[in-house]
Image (cartoon, rainbow, N blue to C red; front, side, top):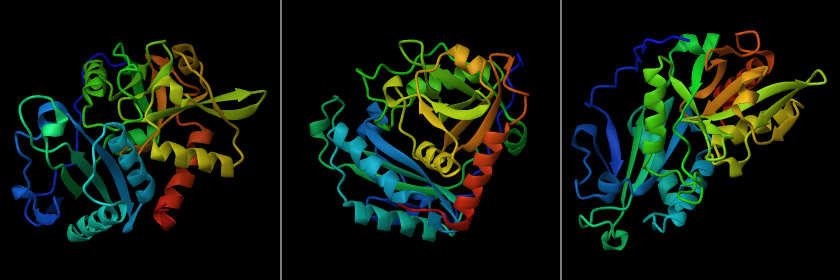
Length: 310
């Protein structure tokens, strides 16, 4: 494993000229899009969000993302001031206004402006904004050759403290694990739960492949392990079912990662990427394995041919 932190490059953002952000019912120039410093999303991370992908003008699993957004908001008693149909229309308008058939969409709902105290019920009106831009979590060569990761000492939030199924604006738990990964010279970290079982990575869900009696089986942690129920994760599970690849949900430990035949990460921003090394241990043959390659090809064919929006 590398010991020197490696520079992490991101694509340069487009200049603000010409970009539009949907903010509280209006499409406005990106350079003028602003949220109040008294917004509880800024002050306390009080809000929810979704990251969504568009391919060829179709918004992948848009309605699934919206269902999760409304579930997250309900769980924290945040009333979204738009119906799902209205928010779907606003999302499509934002995508069209930015002229990006292929885009990463960030849809956020904050508690809104209030007092400097934490009482959320003193915030009279939530803030809603939608950004359509681009994102690149990992360099292209890593999608071809695989990713090195570490297991982080930063454990996932206890589910009795904050449900990991709430996609909230407060990602500090994940950020601290991400810092640890960067300090170790890699770009991602696996997060364990309070019992020492694998939960997820800082921004991705995780699968392993084990060959039981020569039959490759795809395995992912169950929801009770403390992970966000990923939209892309569920899509990959359906692709595995279509390909008649056995699928299991079971608690996993570091040992299961170290001895896996393949490891695959999934997420809206990351899409799908193989892991070829964990804590300095080579996974499988050290290159993306056949199940990972098959599912990645099936995923890319699906989203670029006719991305399902439900």
